Amino acid sequence: MQSAAGAPRPGPAVAKKKKKMKKTKKIAKQLRPRAEAEAAAAAAERAAAEQAAEEAARRARHLKSLSRRSGGERELEELVFGDSLNVEEDELLQRLAGPRRLNATERRSLQKDSSDSEVENEAKGKLLSKKPAWVDEDDEAEENVDMTHRYRKDFMKSDAEKVLTKKNLKRRLEEQFQRAMGGVPAWADLENRKKSKRTASDSDSDEDDNLLCRTGNFVSNSESLPRGILKMKTCLPANQERLANGRLATVQFHPSAQVVMTAGHDRSVSLFQVDGIRNPRIQSIYLESFPIYKACFSVDGEQVIATGTHHKMFFVYDMMSGSIIPIQKVRGVEERFLRNFEVSPDGSFMLLTGTSGYLHLLSMKTKELISTMKVNGRCTASAFTPDSSKIYSYSKEGEVFIWDVRSRKCLHKFEDEGSLEGKCIAISKNNQYVACGSASGVVNLYTTDVCLKENRPKPVKAIMNLVTSATCVTFNPTTEILAVASRETDEAVKLVHIPSYTVFSNFPVFRRKQIYLTQSMDFSPRSGFFSVANNKGKALLFRLKHYSDF
Image (cartoon, rainbow, N blue to C red):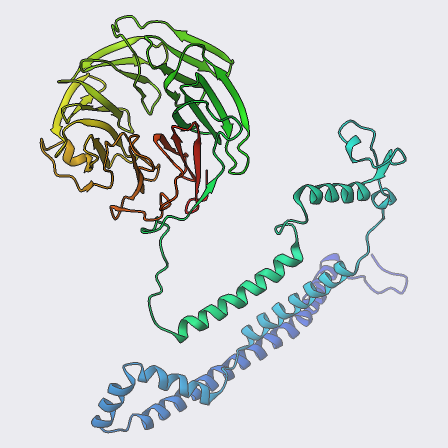
């Protein structure tokens, strides 16, 4: 096929070949700058490698010159500076040589990281400078609160304040709280708290300076009760609002509430709230023709058990329901009178002391007889151990029998040293001590471990401050005070400091008749108060300042 001029046209294969050659030349032209860049980078890397080799050779020459020392100098330097001398020389040479130069690859990565961080910082700045897309006017508007609601009526000062804003209501609540608290509490005053913190830090630094400027004993005193003088305050009698007409037989603090109970021969049981100022009366009950010999709270504090002076029966006063329940007779207990009794610390048992050495164990819940035990001779006093597992019974002959409550068997028996006639017994709340008071006025103090092993144990202390029969002994809850008393002589009360076995010299007050004949004693649950019931119908109350709680 020929053209109009008559020249032959090139075939399709030739045209395709020419097109391919053009494309190849174009690609080669595009790849030439990249190859040149790679060659330049390789040349830069070779130059950096040569420079590093020169640096290494220079360091080797320096090390060689530094190492030209005698053996004696080397040993002396190692003795003075240690084995790290070579490491220190390397660090010194590196500092003299200056910072290490980076190769091309490291420079490119560093530039990339710095550019990324600049971009991030710029983006953060833009985000922070942005304004909110819109503003809701309802958020800034103050919401009104209806003050006529029954929960908010008390905060209204007038009828015009039927509606208050939240801000004003908040201010009104703060005023109400401050009025109730008597001002702004320390924990709510932020400014004063900051100032107090700064002052405390300054005082701490001053104390530290003082501590460093002097010598001596810096061990602080312990919280244990000191010996010698007992800090105490005489309060109004606990039953000031209703003094008993006759002898007060019992005074006892409630096991959990701030309440004290008194009972006596005037046939009444009274409850008073203990505040140390007025001691207001809570309630009184009257038991007709029933002079009370002893009264005692139940462990849960919901009942009062009272026995009479010449009765077979006893009463249970349920304080929760307000009912008085007479227990006419306990089946299986054949006694003419029921007077002395004890309640176990776990609240499960009640122990009645009978005549001729009989001990009757009753269920506290049903008031029914569980078992009967008997000692040789006549039993004058008994006491449960704090875990209610054992019973210590003191006989008139001066022997102490130890019973197992579960099996009702006698585990051990020991003789109270020098006792002619047993009168009273008490066990400390921590089960460490046993106190036995005799008719001679001597109170022997034993450790329970010795009492369980020996037949004739030696007391750790024989308290001989009473000249008449010891009729009442009791420990305070912390086992730091032992109170001993006699009802046969006026002012015959002594408080013994247990750790040192010494008597507090300031109680009772010398040449001041105040206590008269002691009938009963008790400490409050945390030893804050001490009360003594006397024959004048008063429950004398003393505040023991060493103990902060009731």
